[in-house]
Length: 222
Length: 243
Image 1: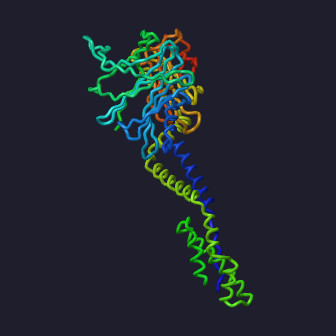
Image 2 (image 1 turned 90 degrees about the vertical axis):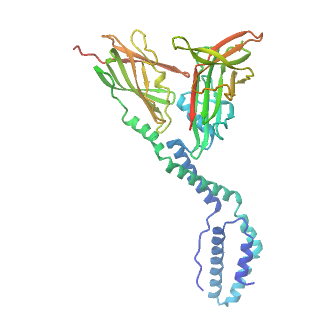
Image 3 (image 1 turned 60 degrees about the vertical axis):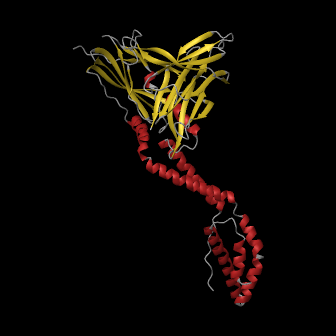
């Protein structure tokens, strides 16, 4: 009777750890060199932070935007110097960077505000966001106005098409932020530019802030 | 109970193992039993007794199988399969997304061979420079300063690029567009007329900036102030040769 050949029985733990190490090294290389394969949406937000040079930001609010992509996530994040709107969605390549709007909040102002509009096929989603630095402002509203042309074909502020009044001021790190999503049903002509106005009211209801929101982005997804 | 029956009872206790692990265990135990039986045969035992003594030495097959089963916890198997699945997906992503490597290419090429061409209509003076400045996570690099004419105006032109401090890192897309070039009198062109970024990739960005100058000007200043980072960089202009 011949002696059996001795085989080394590999430990399941050792095999699992080895495979995990290989996967993690590969993940790091693909994340770092190709900037894809992101497992978490927060990583995509970080890429937008790098692109916009805002530095690391802390998430204030997050919302799903299934009108654009079923996995589309939008974030409002902040640090002392910046307020950042960013969007990301899940694809075969992991979480992909969408578009971002960064507000430089280092300048003295009553408020800093921005907007983002997103279109995909017949669907649209609008976000209005910002930071309110004037402590006298207790309540904010948004007046969404059309852009119209005067007699000389110069763009001017047109009629209000929508007023958003139920805006919550979110406090974080001692600063106050607003962030609202709108379905854009009033926007019947997607090629017509919007002129959003931020209005701020004190505790007596008097208007003490009126500021046109100029920082913004119109993005179309295929 | 013979050797085959012993093995069947033992293997029946292994509920957490995969087919390949089961086969490996069977071969291992079979080999172990074979070795022991051979040793006993060399001592003069007959085959049946050697087999019986070997099985007695190995203990109750059900108990042995249960103890062996405990050596294969489920969570390591799950981790192993998740790791393999992730590896396969990552390999597919890398193969299908190979075109994305141009970001990495730009990051390296811009470091090693930064752009330094001029787009002036007529050049009066030009000088290659290599000024580097850290701005946030990026390196801003100025490679050429020129004076001459652009669209009928006497201008100074600065050729620059930026990339992340760390190779393959993500470059800022807004840095160059936030730089305001000013002449000696502190004047700057409107945003639409002072040039800017060409729109690079994640790996690097590049562009040209312009400001109006007068004959005899000796320097321009690049000003940047955004998101808490700021600099004022004075750049000497190359001496213009009298025509």
